[in-house]
Length: 249
Image (cartoon, rainbow, N blue to C red; front, side, top):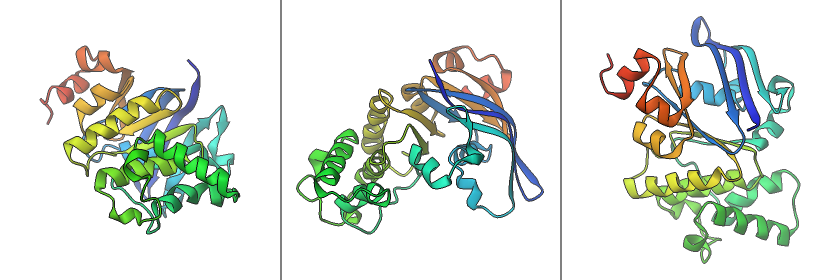
């Protein structure tokens, strides 16, 4: 498999407080990687590094390398980078616009104006996010009228509309009920046919269900990373075993 994204000796601090310590991690094309670990261990911070979201935070200092297709992302235009490395947040955040305009927003921002082309992008993105059949008759109604689970799938469709390579997901199911969460999990497993997905989750059962690779983080350090089945059945590190068996603390 081909590595599409990687970190090398990645360190991050907010002011005097160091949050990430020497993170070395690679992500393969068309795979799902789950990052697990207790709250405050740096999972979401690491995720936000990968499309330079932390650039927006004052007093944030990053050392080390993050490579996307072999190129240092510090040299990339952040707007173009975020087109290729999209992000889905913990809580659905649809724009206060129509369902159609939510999905068309990104392509329009990147210069696509032709209505037929936009129509095709919107339909294809909503189909890939497995929400087309639920919204095709209400495309011009407000996205805020959708349920939480529908809004999250709409946000995934909005990310897909700009044709990314990598999709970052920060606790995408934490605000959803179990039925809506199951739909998102099924969607994640389908997306890996065409995309690299990196998901932060507190839910170890979810990580076991959807991911190919799992990384366990603790206190800003990557303790262990391996195939998901091995992490959950025979972890190498005692700290990992204590966490996944609930004997932590």
